[in-house]
Length: 127
Image 1 (cartoon, helix red, strand yellow):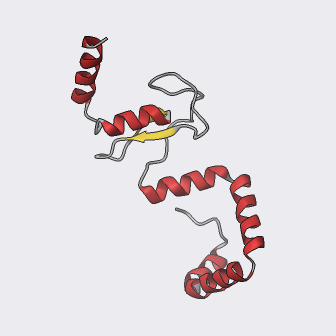
Image 2 (tube, rainbow, N blue to C red):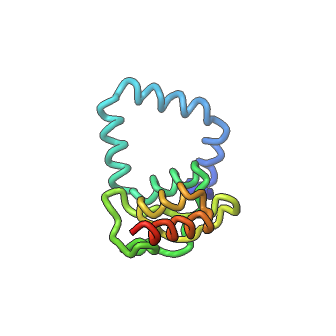
């Protein structure tokens, strides 16, 4: 990820990262209330940055199109957890936006289309 810091400040940070992290940790420990308030304000101000960081650390690709208002599989609006970034676990490519239930369904089927088709046949047969 490209740094948004000015070059000189970024170079200083890289050269002194351990010292800066230790100072920040000490401040957080000495000021837990202020630290919690600052973190809450940051999360509320920049919600997309948090989501992008979580996706990056979990190996989820960046979406290639904006998040729709409804699930691309079931066409239902998302619940309180929002939409999931669906991706191919083998290639890492973004596939689409799904609600939590549809994303879980694909994951439980191990992204196997044959298993999903057999499940559909089973459901039709046992109506």
